[in-house]
Length: 112
Length: 112
Image (cartoon, rainbow over all chains, first blue to last red; front, side, top):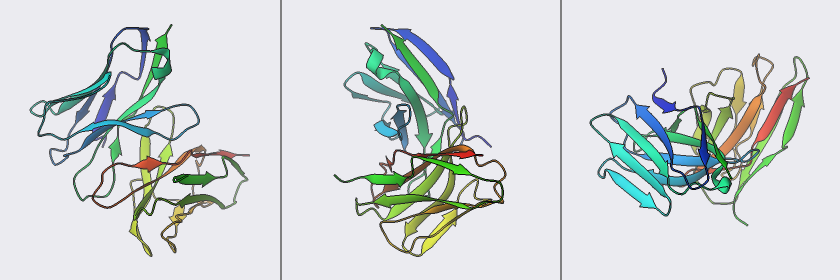
């Protein structure tokens, strides 16, 4: 059972454009929703995270939008840059419970 | 520098052979995790350990084994029972009370 569904699988955006990646979850007990960024041959690194008590969180060019009723959250990358080209994973977890459940990943390519 | 060290970076396994992937952290983190990454499938949890001398199975533990004899170390053995071991293996850790997961740079395991 895939508890976190991520789309699209791949995304091509022009430099300066907005990149949008979406995730949907099934387990209403999830209460922590991070996004990880992974460059080829490296491990993922935490980019930004949100908890369900807020609907939006912004850090620089990166914003998470969270819709609790729809059980969806998304990552928006404003003014996308070639250096943002990477694979992005959404994830979810429940406080005090074992580990993160990851989405299937989105490969983002920002063209110069 | 504090961090998570995985070795080797590349590993080849022969038919019927057991191989061990190393994971060492100097972050003083209590919890450690092993994930398997396959293209298009995201990260799947193999095993995790929240304290020394204790570990639990994740979603895909069959064909794998672990030990946690020291806080700093969490080696993963891929046994001959794992029929499809080719994947990118990621070790991660976090401290109690903090949800941020830190990843190593991974080990790419291939079958000869």
